[in-house]
Length: 139
Image 1 (cartoon, rainbow, N blue to C red):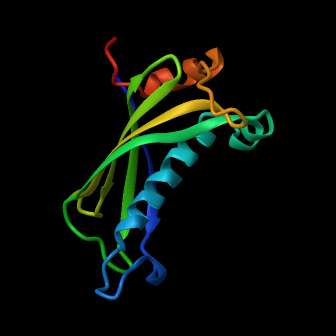
Image 2 (image 1 turned 120 degrees about the vertical axis):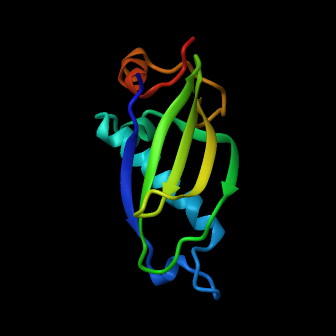
């Protein structure tokens, strides 16, 4: 059984557009924060990865906007791994309102690469072990 990692995000005025709702690109920022906090919570350092010339990059994403969030809303952003491969991870993420209503859904594939050459690298064994508890992949 996989686990879900969550963070809370408050919608600030700067996150909204002229219509008073969250500007669409900010949902991607909220999801990026959740993935970054997820990595940190597992005891992995993105700074250490960057210093070693390796890191995760977004390779593909698909988003679905369901309902708008508004100024001062408190949102829950979830992060769950739907698939692990030798060189990449697939995340399923949701942004939910305080009442649990799903506002935004994101499927996001990230690849582990050499940051200088752009070549795919295998996920380190210690990283894979930490990520498995959050993975839905049955394979």
